[in-house]
Structure formats: structure tokens, C-alpha cells
Length: 300
Image (cartoon, rainbow, N blue to C red; front, top):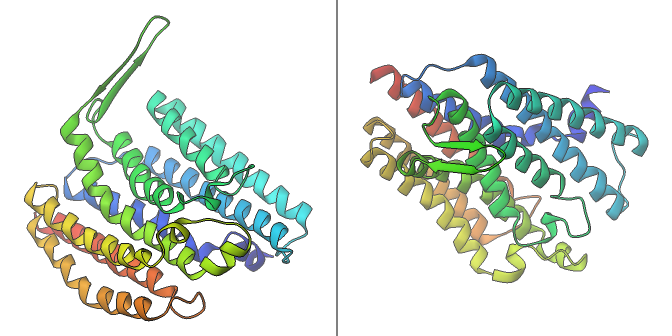
């Protein structure tokens, strides 16, 4: 029963949300920022359960369209989706209640995009937006929410709403720092989706699923490589701007195994054989960055 559930929600793919969470925690520790573990773990629970929910929805709809067999009866599989969604939504609303309207709005946006990724008349997964949105929600919004609930009020933005006015004040430099920090999880997450869509290009065309590789063709391979190189540019830029300690430049050494995996993918794009290089590169780059940022916290 448990193994079927874990297979249904594809537990092995949850590295994207978990590593983004760990990298942000490492940054907070390196900055000697006090962490509100109550709010942080509440967010992690809501985030993780909703990640399971979106995968379950994706599998439920895909198996229906492809006439494949689910791990459970369809009625049971649907109940699991409802339960996961209800719990994650309840936790998210409770987090918003304990914090403010910004968390409610950002969290609500995450929920909407997660649900409509594979559900609705024109699912996001059938458009050339999957890479951008998966990168944005895993790579940008997860770090932003964690930083927002742990940093002093007004660090990034201030939102005031009343019956007469709505005022939003953005702190440009902190916001830009978040975007720069998000480049690494954004690019590595987007590349998992890009590799998947590149490998499935012929199958997707057959079912009228027009993903990004459908529109850019062979350029998808160069984008695949370029996104990885961007993570190293981001490392250097964050050290220069003082976001990260200089020792974090050690993460650049990971380019050696990453480049080997890029070369493998350039030679062949197959789901069964070379798609895994995107997963390997994600673990290599994100794991290395998490490690060096934690190390920088110990020596700084």
C-alpha cells in the first residue's frame, strides 16, 4: 500500500522542492539569521504535500488520456488527491494566518499554477511554459517564501491594503538578491523539465502537446547546456556582490561531472538512457551548493 502510494506521487522526484528548501536554509544559516522553525517547518509540510498533490494530479490525468494503469482504482486515486490537497491547503492557509497577505497571495498563486499544470482545457504542460513555470515556482517562490517568513518585516516588500488604497513598496536590492540567488534552483529545475520534454518530443507531437522543444528544435540542447552554465555565473556573481562567502566558489568544480553529463545528452536524447543526466546534474549542482554554503556558515 505504502509503496504504491509512493509510486503514485513519484516520491523520488521530490528532490526539486527539498533541495531548494535546503539551499535557502543554508543561506539563512550562513547569514546568521535567526530561523523561525515553527513557520519554516509549517511551510515545508504544506509545500511538500502540495508537491505530492500536483504529481498525483498529473499521473491521474495522464493515465486517463494515455489509457495506462494507475497504482490504485481511479476512485481511490482521486480521493488521495482530495486528501493531499485539503491538508496542504489547510496548512498553507494557517501559515498565511500566522504571517500576512503576501504569503496568502504568493501561496495562492503556487496552488493555482500547480493545479492547472495538467488540469483544465489548456493545461500548462501542453504549452511552452513548463520549463519557465517549474523553474519559477521551485527555484524562485520556494526560496522567497522561506526568506520572507524568516527575515525582518519589510526586508523585501511591504503590502498595505485597506478599503480605500492598496500600497506596495518594494526594496529593490533585496529583491534583486533573491532573483540572483534563485538562478541556481531555477535553472537546474527547468532543465529537468526541458530534458523530459526533449526526450518526449515525438510522443508529445503525436498527442498535440506542443512543449518548448517543439518550437525551438535543436536549440533546446544549447539551452540545456546554457542553463547549467548560468548557475556557475550566478555563483560568481553572488560572491562578488557579497551574498555568498568566497569559499562558495568551490562549487564551480562541479562543472567537471556536469559537463560530462551534458556531452552525454548532446549525443542522445532518450528517456530510458540519457534523461537521468538532468537529475544527476541537479543533484550535483544543488548538492554542491548546499554543502559549500553550509561550510561557509561554519567558517565565516
